[in-house]
Amino acid sequence: MTSEIKQAVLPNRGIVAVNGSDAMKLLQGLVTNDVALLDTQPAIYSGLLSPQGKILFDFFVVKIPDGALIDVARDQAAALVKRLTMYKLRAAVTIADVSGRLAVVAVFGPGARFEQGIVYTDPRLPDLGLRAIVEPKDAAAVNSDAADYDAFRVGLGVPEGGRDYAFGDAFPHEALFDQLHGVSFTKGCYVGQEIVSRMEHRGTARKRVVPVNADGPLVEGAAVMAGDVEIGKVGSVAGSRGLALLRLDRVDELTAKGVPLTVEGAPITVSIPAWAHFKTLAAHS
Image 1 (cartoon, rainbow, N blue to C red):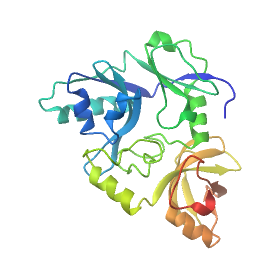
Image 2: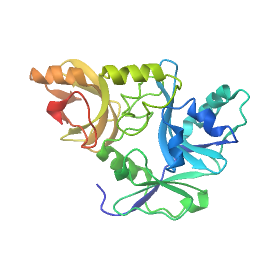
Image 3: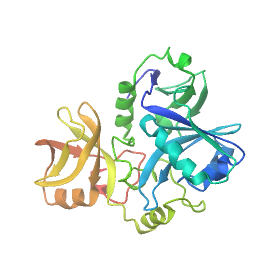
Image 4: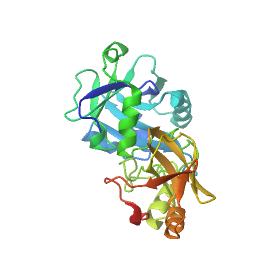
């Protein structure tokens, strides 16, 4: 963990602007979280799913006077504009990729603060600090880089879409949306809602992104093995620490039999962050 305030521009983040009198109504019928929360807080963490309940995009929705700014993976911004436009129909909304005009900054460390742009506490986890949407000139003076923020995020056990799980191939529970305030189980319908609700009520999320630790450097994309059985892959790494999307039911079953977990032949340990509450892997928390 960092002991000083750091500010890092996140060049892999883009911004989509959703403006107009129907902006919030449009988003409320599409995204996993409850847009009504923006009446009392500046931002929410959320996602847009396929009809089959898989995550197509994850993002932050930040309230502005005429709608919202969506902080999304930069290489997904154009696709998000296209997807939202597909659902727009006759709604009084304009949707545009404004990534070239705005930047995203993460501010982290004890007492994190930032004075420029639209600043808000990361709605996933307070320990993540602040995020800010700023003009490029205000991003030029930051004192750190994205690698420092990645290491901080990995240390907290918080996954990132596209690295720790593949877009179009993971359910919200697998990406910890239910643990990181990214999904509402009380709002009305949204795309993929029935599948997500079923997984919640039946407790059928067998895979989760969890922290893993090794004695030496981990390699992003490497297979996690239990004996000769692959049970997942390593995602983001920061030295000997990383995140991995694992079949937790297999972890429980195989480690109970004394089968070691390894990455590229080296032993690893699996843990659960203190802020998370899973229904499996209790013996390894």
